[in-house]
Image (cartoon, rainbow, N blue to C red; front, side, top):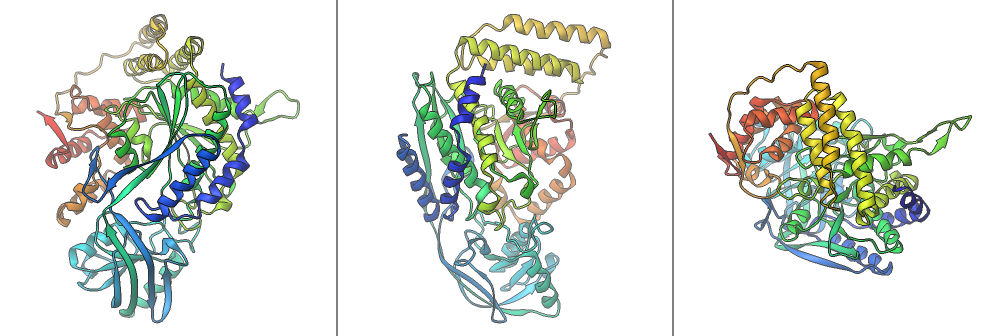
Length: 583
């Protein structure tokens, strides 16, 4: 049903053109609410307009005080220089390497004692501290009166020991520098012999500013719209994260503009990640569905990074997950075997459950109700480092993802009754397959019937007979496998959402005393294997489900849950006035 769109997209989408856009974007240091980000936004607006697409730049207050959907807006930041010298050797220089300063560092000039801190009691008032742990380091520095930190923390230290990690302060009034793991190893040995004198010169300012969002539209016959979203922020170079997503969004927009006007419009949003989406959605929620592009250009062999399609959460059922899966299966038919009897891909890919962490986290929250899958590559050897350069971005991969995304967007934008009925059959087929594989038939039937209903968001078709097919198979399976009667779960607390959108803890944790913050971190470490269940649990909190039912749903969705951990978490949220709880 979508194959003509797929072929048209293959013909029109240019990986070379998308990479050209990426190469322009990586030149800007794109920290939220800064001059570099704003210049990149202006460039993107210009590219849209050069391709005949009307675009505008929207502005939202960004002052460290204004809240959007429970998210605290970041303050504006300006920086002219940042230099760190130790024993007259230059360890960091913002002008040479933007990532060498911890973003949003406050100004400081002068000489200061530099010490090594291996544990909390090593932090000394007035000293600059070298630490391997950025997260704990900044908390201890604030608590013990240290003006700043130096760190070599780096998730890619084994793959890229000479790279620098992208780190940022979010409201902590500190300054800091980043050095490579290789340099950090040497510095630790020297500091264990005794403190050193460090010279710091940072010219920067923290101030109220504006967050900018680039908004463009592919016109449709109706006022209804679907969203293509990608975050424009992150430091230079930020090639794959996320100049690749933005560059490809620009290319997809160029291509879709050439297609016949669809029934529904397509809104392209280039945003500061999370914060920009929260600001925009707090004032604009009338969208049918979306697609998030985040890290979509990886050279898979350099980055060791497969292509993933991340589905919406089960609490926000959506037929688009199955549509993307079907499109991916077609795109994977790249080359034939020797006798031309089978086609297979030359790239790695997978379909994964919802994980969050980007703009689709906000859009797909049931209280927002804009189901938005994400296309991403993960893991990435050079994620959030100075080595995320343009040479890691692959034209072929950009084209692959561009074809998938353009096909998905145009199919939904132009969906009529015929396409909707075809989509309903696909959902039903996948639902039946899932019923045969599930350990909880009732849960699966409920989700899959809602997947069918989600088609009616786009085109109002009758799906009663298809729901009956699903129910009939479920009944047959129940009888065949003689399902044991479910145990009656004991009653627990009933969480109730206080506001729209996901729950952000950034403001709460920033204002929390160190003693309480340490207890929070200890719980996150203790239950790190199920830490990813927290957002899903919040999504299932609909004012009717108690904690035990929520925990069961999370387990059905991703295969794991811990009820004790969820009880602790919801009580923590209640204590900090982030959620209500009925007992």
